[in-house]
Length: 275
Image (cartoon, rainbow, N blue to C red; front, side):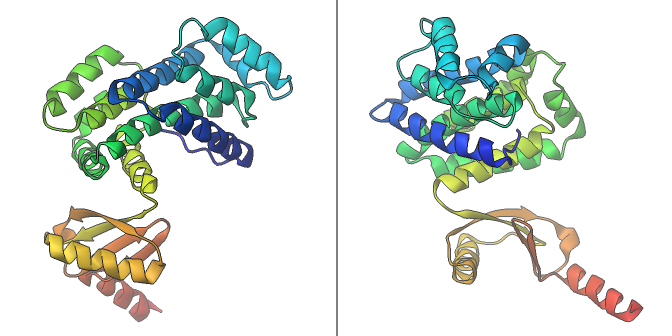
């Protein structure tokens, strides 16, 4: 997955997301799944067709001309919910053609998360994405296979189905299948970004917590409440058990590190002694 950091692309993404939310209004699960599939399909088409990609992302041309081109090519291929989202995307001003593709992929994933949210399953999807990221990241050969853009998407999807089929939410499986079909870097990192995107849908931050021992649900809730008081916003806990941290907890929230581990204190002591 790619991160849209340019201001123009962020503004474009916000405009397209508003259109997406309108497109999902009143839609059933099957309709939202279809919408996501069509957006993924358009992103894949632009990834293959460089001339079309450049034409639809050319900010120097009139937005109406880009809209007309998109409608002429896609109106009879997209449903009534997907077409307005694609039109809004090509009318927007992106910093690059790559960001246009990334924006469409982001909207497809967001649509699936909206589906999970409305079904009351967003928490489960978030947790599954995080855990799968850890599992795949811990298996070098599996990570290499799923992250290889030259490996056929159909074969990788079959591996995903074998790994998680019937064991996770359908939205989770769909998101993972799409991610491995069109990877942008390591799949484990893409899954972590998806978990964070899930958390943001509930307007929460994500605290990545490493602990030498498992934490009970009550302990995790107390930790979440404490961090919420510190940061004045809801905090989702993603826990990783790692015996190497020693006692205490190592907490990362964005770029900030809270190191309360034995290992961390020992390192700090060694630095102090070396000064």
